Image (cartoon, rainbow, N blue to C red; front, side):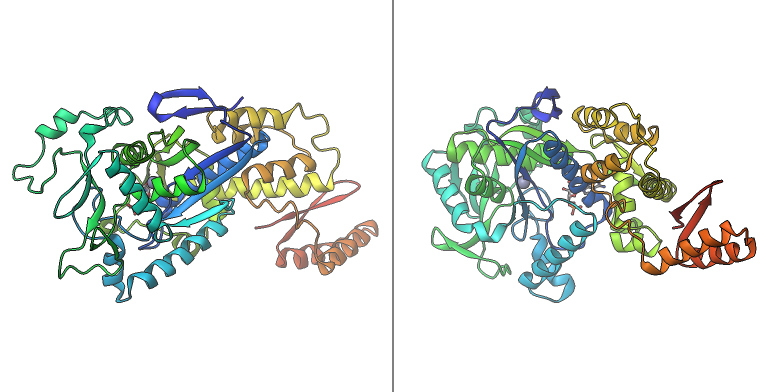
Length: 450
Ligand code: AMP
Ligand code: ZN
């Protein structure tokens, strides 16, 4: 039985999907700059979620969105659109910026070996659905219009504060003096923004006779409505999404369709880097390319992420990344050892069951990894482990090139003849090709050297 921590209930629940298929939605990146390693953690954890569900023999239908419009630089309704900001920075138009960073994100996604969602949903492909949703909210009495846009009246949705356990009266009291616009309540938010005459905003659509664009949260509500149908089984995101973004998605869905958006909500915590927040000013916004320049692959980073828990505040250090890299290297060598020695792991005791049990315990990959470290595992089970985590442990490309096989055969021959000089020469030749040898009295096993 899979157990997951459900944010609105603030506790671990027994997870059961509504139907045969588990419907999942993941809030994706705003495609205005390159993802840093902190941004990428979420997709690694949610990949583990998908793989765990599949290991439990569930079918999964998953949608991941790409925010290419309407997410302002603050979580509120003030400030610049992130895509406009990216375009200004790079001297390109917003469409080019979105295109380039979607491409980059998909490259990172592939390098991390993450399971492709069934649907990649780009926000600007759902503008008609956005407008239908706003019309529905308005028809149901949840919105009001200001000079600035169409706003959601949060006082009309009595459960608005519940999801994030918000203190609305405190928020109201703490609102800035001169809190200027025509908002009725401090927590009200724009579902649709109007573009003022002279305002620069390249992405624009006509609605209510004026040019405008959707507010950030709306796309998730519209995409879920169109692609999956609410309420979905699991909605995922970062903990920063709880008080504003997800709270507002829920309100919009209720306002438009009178239903809950999701049955279970999972949120992952933030990582720090060498004890610091990730920020441009500290120069620690490392991308996967930055890690590659220091000799770490995307998979090494994935190994680091999965060594901890999605709800923990993790501190990334290059020392701990080095440890993750070594651990993965050791696992790859255990794979080739088990491949060559069928006796390895023959009497292992239900190791796969133990690993799945750990994952079913609210995705405890750290515990699953400890079980792997402490077990003798057969080649057959390494294949299953690699499928379960997607760590590219080399279970499939284990077959050596003809050249290396020939060198190994030649060396076996030299050892039989007790020609130790030739045998050492061949060991060096193999080492140059990244292959090491472990000699036993009657046989030799090869290993990766790096
Ligand atoms: P940003 O582009 O910085 O607004 O980040 C986009 C999303 O990535 C945020 O909404 C978070 O959910 C996630 N994120 C940002 N920084 C981190 C971090 N240090 N650790 C984990 N997730 C992060
Ligand atoms: Zn969202």
